[in-house]
Image (cartoon, rainbow, N blue to C red):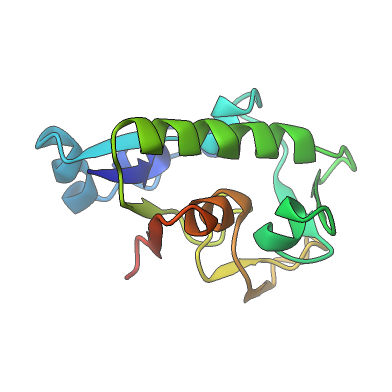
Length: 146
């Protein structure tokens, strides 16, 4: 069983209320081989919502209390992102998922890249919060591009 970012199977749950449908990943869901999650919605954030970026590091730094997740209005949404990551992990462990395919560049789901925390549009090497939590708990994480 895999966990897949819900936006990748057509759910319009991204911050901008759009999806990033990948028909091959959607097929995994149809075959009963995957469950969709949107950590940001699971954490109580609305859709649409202001875009957010990790400030001061990456997802591991957020887990360790060294970085925060801030939206473009200046609101600290770290608590919501943490709650959503924990709920996503709970779902993953409940269904016995050992791997996840998560949306690259997301402050929750990015597995190799996130935005720079300055809302400049620049991507930097790093990992999102949910992806970091999954890896720390033995769940293999890859992006939709892998």
